[in-house]
Length: 123
Image (cartoon, rainbow, N blue to C red; front, top):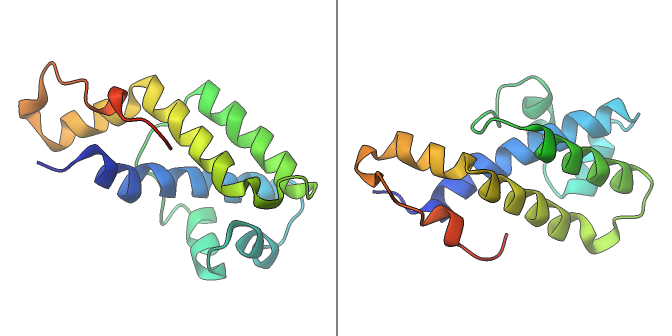
């Protein structure tokens, strides 16, 4: 059985980074600028944009709205040290939506009735 935090690291955060990278590119930033602002490599950005990485969790309307707002702040230079808290806030929305629970159940069918993912605090 894999803990929810492991699934967050392997699937949720890469999905958020992928969607955020795509939004920042749409807003006119280069892959290099995206990598610098997100603190990831340029090759990671390239893989996210090409859908080779970061497709582990479905992105609902609420998550997409939060990602777009964060992307606008980052592109405008208003995020500062808020990039990580912003990603954590989006991660919290993913958890609240139940998407992490769905992923956790796919990984371990014996988790019927489990609400561990919903009870994790933090981002």
